[in-house]
Length: 198
Image 1 (tube, one colour):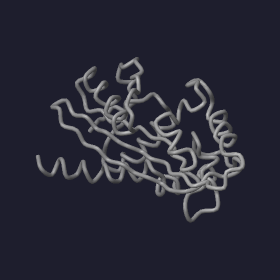
Image 2 (tube, helix red, strand yellow):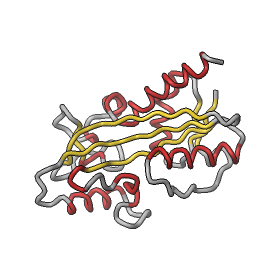
Image 3 (tube, helix red, strand yellow):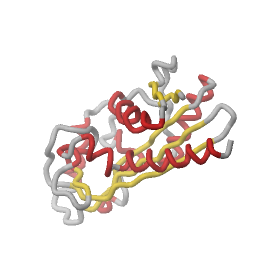
């Protein structure tokens, strides 16, 4: 089975390919599927943005599309950056490093470092059916970045029950405990149930 990932993020594509290959699903990027557009993420929730992206790709290709909208929610910032995680600095073109350093600056002197990563997955089918799943990974924000693995805010996020940042844990551990891995496993169950009913 083929699914089009409603994203051109190479690191997200690799994660999705790894996590869905065990179900025999071949995940291709939207660019490889001929979709050279960016969907404007106007939703107020991760769920809304995931749906906007997946449904746009299904409408353009007539094929099954899957989208993930994810981000970091920090307690001391009332859940920010949330859906604005990729443009937290106000500039979508900024690097991951610029974003997490900006976050650390906003949290300077703050004792409450509690945070969570959230991933919402939406899969849209040409017949109008929709599958959704969500995963969360709780943890805290470090005082300084560490590690070279992962992407996004991984160097400053320490998962619960770990002393290392997400960027130090390696892909196997990350896929097991992180928000996207959890969302994908929930999605796998949704997908199995969906096809079992067919």
